[in-house]
Image (tube, rainbow, N blue to C red; front, side):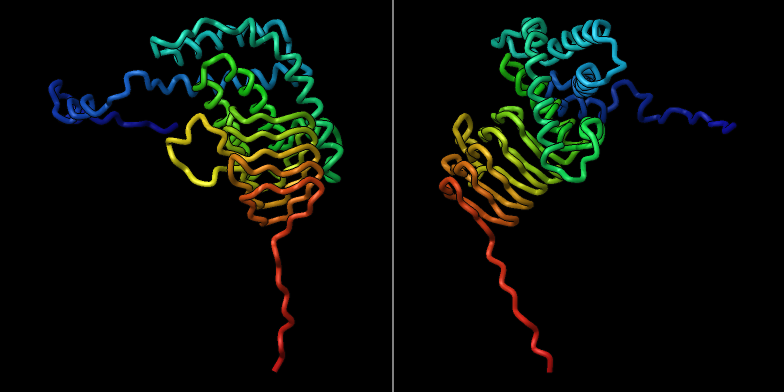
Amino acid sequence: MINFVKEPKSAIMDTRNNPIIEQLKQHKQNPNLRLKIKERTEYFTNLLYHTLFDSDTELTCNLEELEKVFEEITELACWEHEQSCESVWEQYVNVLPEILKKLNMDAQAFLANDPAANSIEEIYLAYPGFYAIAIYRLSHELLKFGIPLVPRLMTEYAHRLTGTDINPGAQIGDSFFIDHATGIVIGETVIIKNNVRIYQGVTLGGRYVARKQRNTKRHPTVEDNVTIYANATILGGDTVIGANTTVGGNAWITASVPPNSIVSAITETKIKTIT
């Protein structure tokens, strides 16, 4: 057993009117910045995922616990007097079956598109791209109820775990497939339609960043049945990738692409001259 020697308190910290403490109080200017909300939102997110997918989880007990935690985090998140933050749990829980239906379609898209997948169970348990999509769909529905902080904390938690950054405001259709996940960025006003496949490192972003662009369509639209390969960058709110298009790896796109296109980054190969 290790014995720890308790050090005497610093004389600085013993002084009640310590100038350092007063300076810290002076500069601590965010009275509503409670880190507890981040911790509780992460707990809520994990519990929600288990409730929807874990075959050993008892639904009734978990839904009761989710409701209690949900009320706690929404109360913590509602500090703006002009914003109405009444409990929306009853409305939110009513959309969970539809979210689960969509996520099961996403899982099937993973199974259909990835030859390395051995089973549907592997998708739910081991694929970071699926987890990122799941938390996105759960947070996107919650965002509709006017409590933006909690959905953002949910997707940032998934971002930290998976390397995939999907803003909860994005609009994503059915049967969405993300392979490898790492480094993907999907901006707030992105629109992705059905049966889209995206690989690692893809960015769907804005042409430039300016605060005045807030509440405007500044990220691209991706139509049905599009495949976007690794490290492609697609920028701009008026940029549309037409249906059935394939975007090759490392492509840089800032203008619309018509349907049924193939876009590729030009690669030049030269044969070495041996002297």
